[in-house]
Length: 216
Image 1 (cartoon, rainbow, N blue to C red):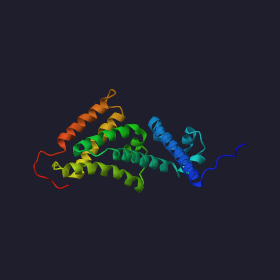
Image 2 (image 1 turned 45 degrees about the vertical axis):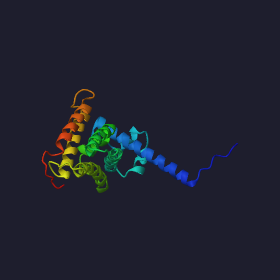
Image 3 (image 1 turned 90 degrees about the vertical axis):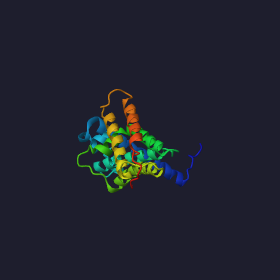
């Protein structure tokens, strides 16, 4: 009989960490689905443990308490959004990258609907994200702001400051995506169509008709 294979200590540690992260993500996925399907009052450590068919000890091994799980959903959602936005390549025309970021933003939100709800609707009463999680969320705004700054730097004057223009962009994206996620845009495909309409309006509206630059 052959002896069991030996794995280097580093490999064993990496496999252990990968298993730990897999369990952690399964907990977050289950918590997010509970929030979507049943609302915040249904989320408890006991019911979540039942959902993943594990003991509450497993939950407390990974998270201090229920608020820590919600905070992890918040942060994980923004980390996913940040990664999706950072994956958008640079474009020869800066405005094209702004439009591409808008499309990537929507795709990320739809793919992570439960986390998106926690990120922006504060659906769990009393939840306040940690400072660390808020810092992750700020990076997403900075990616959009940098793209708008590039439009300005390319010689396109803006109707308002870079910061305010970015807030309009983010607000437009969030508003349309929220309507789509909550079922207010009607038939399948209308969310993408409305986003494209909004992106074209932004294409025309972000650069000001004025010939004088305003400082960002």
